[in-house]
Length: 343
Image (cartoon, rainbow, N blue to C red; front, side, top):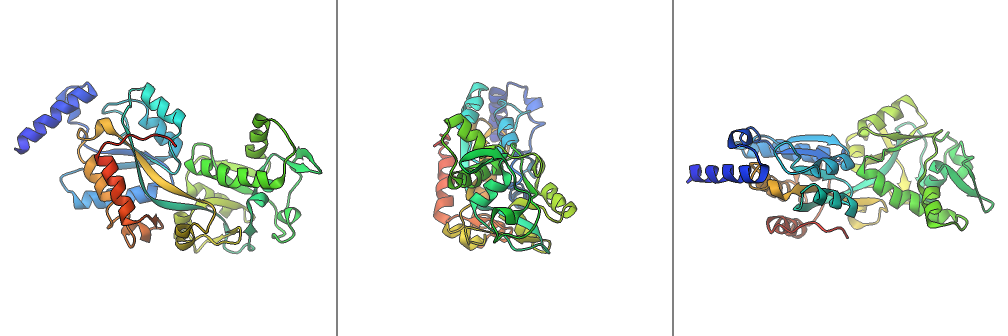
C-alpha cells in the first residue's frame, strides 16, 4: 500500500513538475521564504514539525521580506520554485496576477494569527507618546506649513509637539520589500497625513505627499529587525519600527512608545485597542500540495492549538493568537483547496 502511494506521488510529480521521477525525488524538503516578521514563527514551527514528523525533512525557512517571498512563489510551478511564501501583508491583486501569468493558478492563503507594529528606542531614552500625525510630520519629505507644502523643517521631536522628548529625529523604517512597510504606510503615514490637513491636490500628488519619506533622517531597512536594532545601537537617538514579537524578545534593550495613548501588548492587539496591528499569513502553492512531501501536514501542524492557538508555542514567542474556531476554519479552507481572492 505504501509503495503504491509513493508510486502515485512520483507520477504526480512528473505530471505537475515536468521532470523525471529521479529528478523529482531530489526535492523532498518544503521550501519556505518571505516575511522577516513571520520568520521566527515559521522557524519554530518548522523545527517542531521536523521533530514531530521524522518521516519528513525539516522544512527550509528563509527570510527576504514579504514582497520577495511572494515574488518567488509566483515564479512558476516546479521543483526549483518556492512552496510557501510567508507574509505580513495581504497578497495584492497585481501580485496574484503575476502568479497566474506564470502558471501559478492555485494560491491558498492561511492566516495563523496577528501581530502589531511598534516604535521603540534604546532602553535609556525618553518616553514617547506618539500619534500618527507626529510620525508623518517627522518622516514625510514635505509637510504642510501655513497651508503650503514645504520641505520638512523638523529636526527635533519637540519641534513637532512640545510633549515629545527634546531629541533629534532619526527613524529606521522598513524598506519597500517588507510587508510591514505596506501596513506602516497605510496605518501610520496615510492616517497621519490625513490628520495633518494637507492642502487640496490631485490624487497622485496626495499619495506622493503622504508616502514619500525624507532622506536626511529616515533610513529604509532592507534587512530584518536585527539590522534595525543595530541602527538603534549605533545611534542612541534613533527610533526603530519593529514587530511586537521582536520587541518582546528584546525588552532588555528596547523601550516601546505608546501610539494614540495605547501601549502595544498581546492584550491590546487582541482587543483591537492598539491601532497598528495586522494579520499574519502564508501563501501555499496548491500545485505542490501532494507532490512535495509534507505540505498538508505542515499546514495542519502550524494551525494546531499546540502551535498557533491560545497558550500555544507561538503565543509564548509573541504571536497574538486567533481563536481555535478561526484556525479550524483556515485549515478547512486550505484542505478544500479554496483559492485566494484579494478583497
